Structure formats: structure tokens, C-alpha cells
Length: 486
Image 1 (spheres, rainbow, N blue to C red):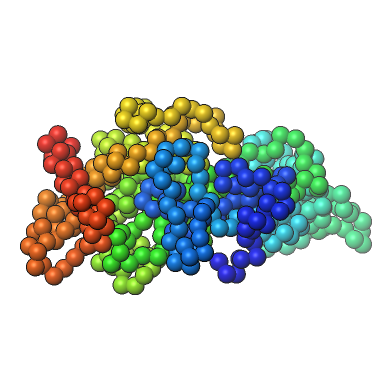
Image 2 (cartoon, rainbow, N blue to C red):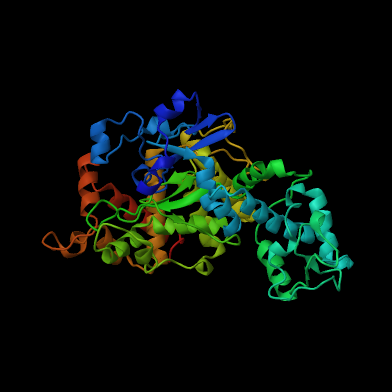
């Protein structure tokens, strides 16, 4: 973060420039500033765990921020405030699903490379959408038509697209696919200064079209001129940036309350102590909800504690930890896990896009299970109406349900059910589970080892009992009695 500190803006800086706060983002004209989240601001299934609002200098020095009250979290429009904000372009350019060369050009503010990167991406979409190649029109005529629609590419030579490989230059084209080494307005046919032409390499053309097909963008409907380059680039960044992020705490230890802490976040800036996990386009989002539930389970946390020797949960360590593969989940298991996971994770409008994506990828049975879960939440808490704030922009195929309403007691029960369920999926029996929760429950008070001692001590101080142990064992017994676990 130190190398990027020049990108950070404080609330005072932005307010002096008369920027307006919307949710926890600042708006100044056409510019948006996104919050910069730190690891201490998130917890299990909770992206609103701590806030800089009301934090004293002593809090900041200790790294212990104020935690919002339950009543605040029951408001789905409530957002936590960071210490700093950064321009949305600085966030999107690092996570948008665009070719790396184009993202690097935008980040470097290199207009010529941005022009080339846009042409490289758009021309492939142009060919795929208009099926020009199948009409025997040829690459060169297709390029001319493309330039007519996207004037910003007029100064580019089509050979800059890299489709000709090492093919030698020709004095004149030999086919309709040959491309000139000059922009179309600069092609010369003179005997002394004739433009060189190059035949495309079909393997390169095929791999180019295949690679660009992975980027899901829509071509602009109207002609785009040279003056539109940056507006096009910014629009693409916002369009292709993820609407939510999957983060975890890097700072961890085997002797604190919990070790593995994972959560869904809005699309925001994050510091290096909150690493991100990215997923391929084809991964089903309900399975990502299962991954979240798995990583936040006590069983996974217990294993993580055996691996971490220092104070950092790094990618290197995370890659060694046992996670149930996506193929292991049955339809019934998805129906149990996903509704509970989304109720825990989706309690505010700023992460509603995660619920939207789960809903979009869910089959009718899973959608019905999510709706039943939402109705149970409404019956227990009063629920919310679908009154989205102005700063939430849903897609056409959004989930029709508003966020789940926060309830500390209900969340404790749901997490206990998931902890018990995942203990069963990991193959534990009741004695194993009792040991993970508290080894003295199995071996007696003189047993020298410990698992979640800090969690136990904090809950005894707060609730007068080791609440997690009671709730998880009650859930374990209930799930076996009902035949959910066998």
C-alpha cells in the first residue's frame, strides 16, 4: 500500500473539493471515489464489521476500530466508512475482465496503446458479431468497415493487431485477407513508396478470435471517434469490473479467536492485508457461496490453525488447505448450504449483486429454497421491502428479493448449522467435533492442548457460556435427528 499511497484521498480532501457521499462512495462530477477497505473492516460473512466512523486516534493506533451496533446493521443501506478513498478507475483497472495489455495501457494513461488495445478487442467482436469472415469478404474489407464505425482506429495499421506473424512483406495484396502495414488513409501504391502488405497467419487469427471471445462486452451502438477513447475505456472498465469481491484476512494466527476469516465485499479498493480470490467466468456462483461457507467453518479453521506458524494466511498456505471440490456438492447439499450462506452474507444493498448472481445461476429448486430462507428471515425479523437506494444499479435479471435482515441471534444459529453440517461433510463424528470445539470436553480439564480457547473465553465473558459449542452441538444433534446428516 505504501507505494500507492499517492492514490488515496481522505474524507477531508474530498469534502474540500465538494464531493458528495453516496453510501460510502464519493461522487464528484463524473468521477467516483471508492472506499479503500482494510482487513480489520471485515469478518465472517460480514463486510460491515468495523468502521472508521467515530474512530479515535487511539483506536487507529491500536488497529481496533469501532464496531457498528446490531441496530445499524439491520439497516440495509448502512455502510461502513474507510480511512481513505481512491478513484474508481484505479480499482477497476486492476480487476476488470479485459485484456491485460489494455488494462496496462489505461493504467499508464498511454492514449496510443489504449487506442490499439480497444481496436484489438473491438475488431474481434466486430468479426464475431457480423460474421464477416464467413461471407468471404476478407479481413481487409472487414477492417475498412470496422474503421468506418470506429473512427478512433483510423490511424492504426491493421498489421498492428499482430495477426500476420512473421509473414514477409508483399508489394501488393494477393488475397482479400492481406493487410497493409499503413493506416487505410495512408496506403500508397506508388512504384517507389508502395505500402507493404502482409498475409495473415490463420492460426494467429483463430487464436486471436478465441482469446477475445472470452471477454464479455457489447460493442457501442454508435460510431466512436478519436475523442471518445477515454470515455470508452472508462465505460469498459466499469462494465467488466466485478460487482463484488471475495476477500480474506491476511493477518491471522493460531492463537486468536478465529484464524480463517473470509467475506464477500462490494467492488472496492482493498489493502494488501485483505487478499482477493478470483473465479473463472464459468464458475457457478452458488458454488462460490458454498466455498464461502466452507472457508468460514470451524472445521476448516481448525485445520488452518495447524498450518499457520506465523501471523499471515498467505496464498501459499491457503493453497495447501483442504477444501471440498465443487463436484462434491449434491443438489440437496446446495439446497441446505446456499440459502444459509446468502442470508449470512447478503444483508445490505452494497453486496446485493452477490445475491443477484447467486439467483441468476440457481436452478428453480434452489431459487425456491432461497426464497423460503428469505421468508423465514422476514418472519423472524420483519424483513425488508424492495426499496433500493439510488446508488444501487441492478441488472435486468436481478434477484427479486431485497437483502436479508440482520439478526445477531439468528446469524449465530445459522452459522452453527453450517458448522455442524460441514463437520459432517468433512467426515467428522461427534467426538471429533467436540474435540475441535473444546478438547477438554473429550479428554478432561487437565488436557494441555487447545483449539479455540480465545473464542471460548470471550463467549463465556460475554454470554456466560461457550455459546458456539452449545449451538453447534445442538445443530449437530438436530441435523442427525432430522436425517439431514447421516
